[in-house]
Amino acid sequence: MLSFDNTKIAFSDKSTKSLRKAYWMFWLVKNPFLVLLGSWLLTLANKLRLPLHWALRNTVFEHFCGGETLDECQSTIDALGKKNIKAVLDYAAEGAEKEKEFDEATRRIIATIELGHKNKNIGFAVFKFTGIARFALLEKVGSLDPLTASESLELERVKQRADLICQKALELNVQVMIDAEESWIQSAIDEITEELMERYNKERPVVFHTLQLYRTDKLYYLKKLTALARQKKFMPGYKLVRGAYMEKERKRASRMGYASPIHPDKTSTDAAFDDAVRFCIDHIDQLAVCIGSHNELSNSEAAFLMDLNELENDHPSVFFSQLMGMSDHISYNMADKGFNVSKYVPYGPLRLAMPYLIRRAQENTSVAGQTGRELFLIRQEIMRRKKESSSTNQN
Ligand SMILES: Cc1cc2nc3c(=O)[nH]c(=O)nc-3n(C[C@H](O)[C@H](O)[C@H](O)COP(=O)(O)OP(=O)(O)OC[C@H]3O[C@@H](n4cnc5c(N)ncnc54)[C@H](O)[C@@H]3O)c2cc1C
Image 1 (cartoon, helix red, strand yellow):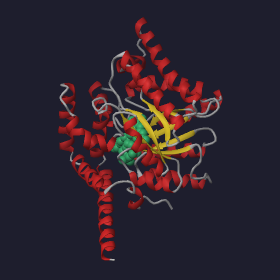
Image 2 (image 1 turned 90 degrees about the vertical axis):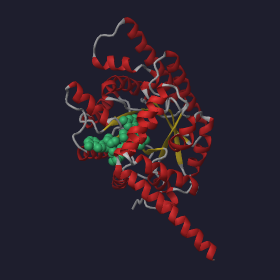
Image 3 (image 1 turned 180 degrees about the vertical axis):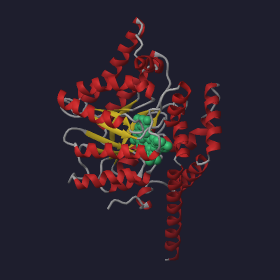
Image 4 (image 1 turned 30 degrees about the vertical axis):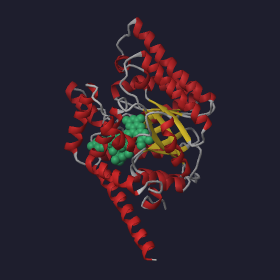
């Protein structure tokens, strides 16, 4: 039986000081009012270019990100590697608008692929389309309105950037995941990603598409794309997640008067996620899957299904992934049992990583049960260490 309760394993590379710091941070983000106020102040301060380093660098940034540069991430990569966990270096720059910034992001993503080729402790490479393309362009492509001549050229450059990244991944035998984003740009991302998978996944799954199962249409999409891949003779890779933009999606749908693309409640999202995991494990000879979740039940259910299907824990087509700073009890305990586990390690200039940090704070607020669990486990480990040291002192 897979258990996530062993806090000694879960926090084995954390000092008691860093556990105390994490405790206070989760305690603060548990308060929705503080998070709302903090997100608003941070967005404003970022827009006004106020100095934010002093407030964030040694707190949320240190907790959720590996550093501002690849070099700064090295200690995190080494520490994870010692526990059999691969780092997924995620250049967390969002909301750029200029071609120069997109080219720079492409170079940085390729650098993570090159590093991944050399360093066995690095797992997938990853990127977001909004890191290499203008949001408004992706939105227009998704709207099916005709593009102007200059927009068509711009789209070509976006495709070339994505192509360069995937080509390098194929050449250096590194797998690359493409994150999923808001639904009104996702259809453009889906279309380009499908083309990339068809081109680069002929021999093995190089490119991994992300499916957000909080969307009502994505379970069907998973089945349809898998059938299409079989027909066209390529092997799809999927990262399954629930989805991070629920509130934004619902607000936009109600503002603009269309039906929300998100499941009406958590139970139906959970059911779609479980069905997707089951489908992937049942069709593992045709695809590869990465389960990106902090939900204990989803992870243990996937492990159970693997066992039922007689797949070994380190099956080469099944991966589990969590985000840095969250759910170490799942990552470390699964890695200890030999599963293929990775941790997203976002890095990049603090100012550009701001939307990512705000999303993490909001997520930890909206998922009150999960944050309560993190707090409980951290407190338990601090108590365990206290007891251990007092009994050692007595002896
Ligand atoms: C490795 C990794 C990679 C990720 N990559 C992406 C990505 O590319 N794109 C992306 O969008 N997200 C991504 N995420 C975030 C992910 O989508 C979730 O927001 C986050 O992981 C929380 O879901 P959960 O399965 O961990 O936990 P849970 O706590 O079980 O689920 C919380 C999630 O359930 C859904 N939910 C909650 N309440 C409701 C409701 N009332 N109705 C319907 N649904 C509800 C929401 O999606 C919410 O985020 C990633 C997460 C991980 C761990």
